[in-house]
Image (cartoon, rainbow, N blue to C red; front, side, top):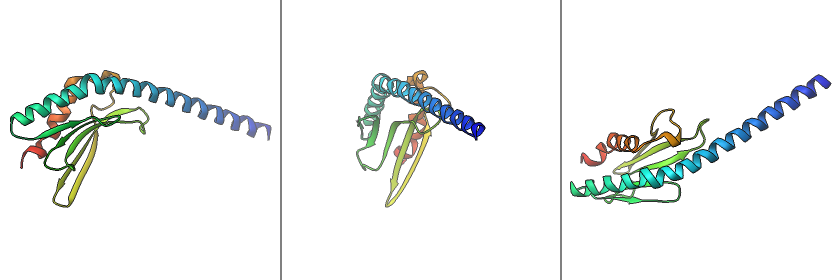
Length: 140
């Protein structure tokens, strides 16, 4: 019984340390994400929306708490949105894409850049992701 209790305590301690480490990683990623939104994703989304308007595609930028959304004026269901996915082992910035065709709604989510810490993301990563996903919104 004493060996069992020792092993059980060790497992509990290991689990507590892992949870504390994870909380610290998520807190650091959240702080970096707020800076990312303010300095990179937000301004670049506004520039892309202005360029799309100049080409005849009416898009608007919204900044809900914890995200930046580039939304089509034609439908509120058509948007590209940046979000922090903290459910992964390493928190990451994801781009959520939501498109509608009639009653059918297509959604998918992808990391902005694979295996990249939030504080290493650049404006080029944001632009690359937006350019890769904007096609279906402007092909109609």
